[in-house]
Length: 326
Ligand code: UD1
Image (cartoon, rainbow, N blue to C red):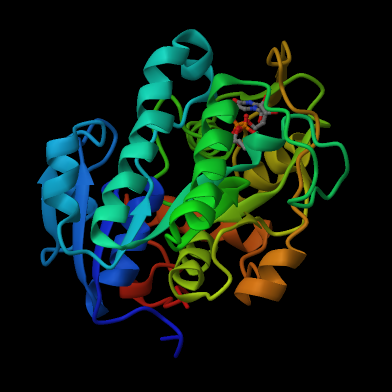
């Protein structure tokens, strides 16, 4: 365990039963009193250690939030509607969860004088003006989701300036890892499912678009750093600094799984970002954070999970032998 790691604290993780939140809870629970606020629409109780306190409720509900946040030292705010497509279909609905609830969380944190770590997104940059993109680049989101994440990210900064609340915004690039599943999950989980079933791997467009894929265990480490840093009131890119094309990703997954899947091309996704990659030098400098899991080893560990047929297990998880949440 990192000597700077947070311990003996009372912590709330909103969205704590979801993909990223549950990995974070798992890392925090051995050393802290952890509460989870989750409505279990996409989260799963099976992901949670036995000794966490669960508040089954909606992050938009001020009463549930108040109950979950009473007396906490830190709030990790991960509850969100993560689908960009859903936000395009119903901007007001996603605004309630992604923005209005974030403001509720910040207000609740003021009551408790708690630090807040906000899950922001690379979506704030829209089509990045430079690659890799630094935090100082212009922010022109191309979806309601991106606008909502940008506003929450800016509110976090503002609350530090206006009210002296300790806040940190983490702008995640394309996060992947165990427990990412469902109709709105990312390209890696979709390709893995297709490869395992020997079904065609569906590349949208020419496949030469690229992303910065960051493993969830690295995202957890970034959160732990954000919980203790003195460099508050800031936003940080959380990625690896390496870009992978979607076509290369398809090949890597086909090889790693030993699949007979063909690679087929579909229409490109409308409004798709062509290239996305993080300049992570600010996180390195101010948080002491560097990603440790490269795309090939990250994929291999996921495939290992599939082979052993363990739905949530991985060599990279802390309680199961890998111990990489440091
Ligand atoms: C992702 C995040 C989003 C975040 C954004 C930040 C997910 C699910 N979404 O969006 O929350 O705001 O990064 O940059 O992690 N693709 C295919 N075939 C498929 C599925 C996808 O070729 O079957 C392609 C897409 O067209 C896209 C790329 O893979 O070019 C990545 O898509 P996806 O995983 O949905 O993530 P983003 O759209 O980058």
